[in-house]
Length: 172
Image (cartoon, rainbow, N blue to C red):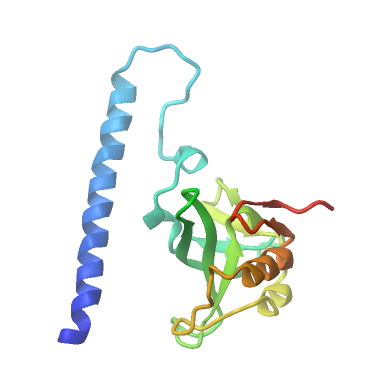
């Protein structure tokens, strides 16, 4: 029972945070609806909320596909840059059966494009390319503060990495 205590605490915290964010989001939507402001800002709705903001709990579990529509996996984790407050990576899980034998891939956030029509992310990589990408196991995470590791991962996905932690698309 002692071994499950951290897991139960994490689940309870996640549920509490999710409920708090949902209530705040609903209040903001209601406030927008009640406003008579005629600005050109769009009102938040279920179809366009993905275009503007993303709750971590909604990103985790989202499918990742390639340009051909092949299922590449789903997002298991989000890695934040504490210095800039931005998302550095999403951890995509691929392979295995029901989570057993999965490989994890750190994909730079900027390498993903959002498909709002399908509420999924698109990565410009075929399955073979992703299978050959730097991967790790759930119990053996790489040192994500290591500049060499960051540089290699970003380069693999066609992104530029700067040691300060700023990232962007690499020049063609």
